[in-house]
Image (cartoon, rainbow, N blue to C red; front, side, top):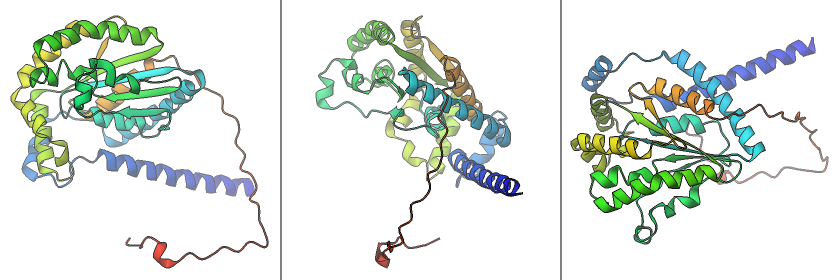
Length: 306
């Protein structure tokens, strides 16, 4: 009888945990906060039908469970995994990265999103500022944009000279071959969206006060230079798509499908295996009959506003 009661208690607890996880995911996935009705009408009419929320969440949770297995395998074997995320502004790179890292240990899986180079870094070898962030043994590193800034935004916006861009395109294949030879598993993703989709996503950001911070003057300029970015992307692919470090294109007009497809593909790139875990037993609580808990001053407590 007691086993049945314990099972029911465990089941209730598990259901509550799942609900909390679903709430967290819903908060991350909520795209229409205070979105103007006109923009919402346009977006719903123009965007492709997506996976229904329940199906999306069930598949995401399954994939995240596999990511935990991958993480355990990386930590156990000392593997080094580097994943590069590139694409146009608002293509969904950040959303995919969040879903990958959401349930992983930040000591094993970390995100690198570098700011613009400092004056000192501008005088260094171009790849130098990225090298300290490369994975060590037992680490997964996700680059939210990478050294490909040079043949993308820096080229289009004129931050790099044609000579610097050409030097980069000559160097990057060998640089990445060196990384692979050193034992790093390098995976490169390009999140691809249409001109119309980017326009709609930018409109959403303009009308959503929680997302306006994502729109920078550089982002707005990228709309003007759409075709220049397209040409830069094509040249980058032609010069840096190698056998050792190929590019993988993620069709990203549908955010949910893009996230699921990207995670599934990433898992398929690594021959990870289940790592047996030691059984965990909760130790008994030690009670001291002479111990009296001190009452902390009320002013130290956070006010219960909710």
